[in-house]
Length: 156
Length: 119
Image (cartoon, rainbow over all chains, first blue to last red; front, top):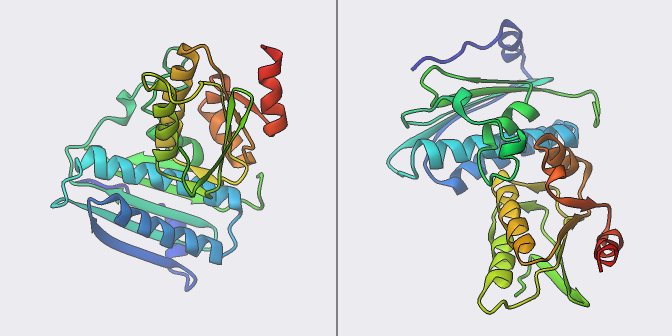
């Protein structure tokens, strides 16, 4: 598997003592995934991140979990999902990887086109890209790395 | 049908459902309403107001089921109106352009007026 390398900026932050990290492998169970998400959100709240940012991270992580567990690992509890999270003073970086065959995120139809608006699926990747600052998939398409920079205040 | 995460009441032939849950991750509530209006014979009339004023977060799975519910209600000649969306939820509907699919108003009074306009 090939994963993108954290930016130098992020690497610098990872060296500060205020960085919170969470690396964990969980079975393909959405409740287990949501427990990790809750932990990340709780840490954001503890650091008084703006509610708009917390909403964005929550939405993106929820989508990443569903993609990994349902679409990637096909709910196979023998397959694992890997979370890597780095939270610094001003930036959150999360990587979620599954053991599935991967997919081509660029092949997902744009759900905001008129002809797709009423389609009741296919918004996950778009929501991750819309609410996070960077979203990168690995070549195989079974891992996504996302970053969110802390806004100055709600509404920024 | 109601559960502890919702408050239901009727205004004429309109069913108003106020979700009393901060995070809607599950589609159960929307699916329940879908079953009510699509049952044969229907358990309830199709006109529906969904009040999200106490909801801080919804998943895209819920969004997707709302589209299905909207389609079902429209096909029965009814109307679905959403109200009470927070600024974050408004952003979500705007970003997905679903604000052009759903009728979205500020509050329950405004939602009920949408039905008067077409009465």
